[in-house]
Image (cartoon, rainbow, N blue to C red; front, side):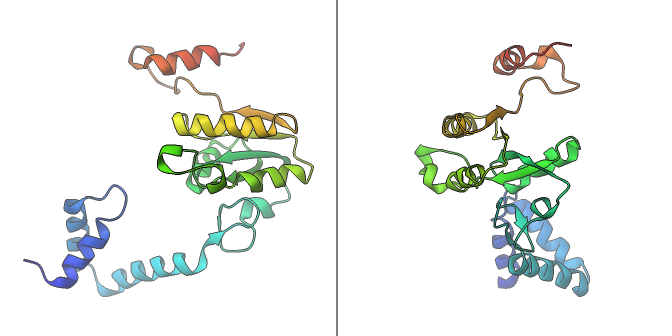
Length: 196
């Protein structure tokens, strides 16, 4: 029913996470209504990100240079490394404003059922960074799900004798009502309680 280029655009847009066919159609029709310059800017932004962005050679965050802005920043605490699954996991930590250390991006979490084993993650590189010296604490900030927990335990076992290993606290979010919390969240909140 639609011209082939429009169908192709809808097909490509629907491959994006969270975008189904109907959303892809809305986006495609929106782009068709926009001035040519706007759509060319969008297309160029996509090309630029694929051509110019790479992984930081030290922490594997996204970067335009060999080292990302965090690894280049001498004001950051070099003795502290926060381990995350993906580069986008850094954003909420930075938005919190309290963390001033470095990062290490694993590139996923252990999931043997999905074929993701330790050699598929950047665990070896993390061990090398710790082995270089100067690192006093590794904060494991993997997601609080089965894969994230197993990844955290695996890394903790490897690092336990080398540096202090901590895990992000988990429990009730600020502003949440206790009556709506699930049992696992309440259990974690209780076990992770601290003195006031």
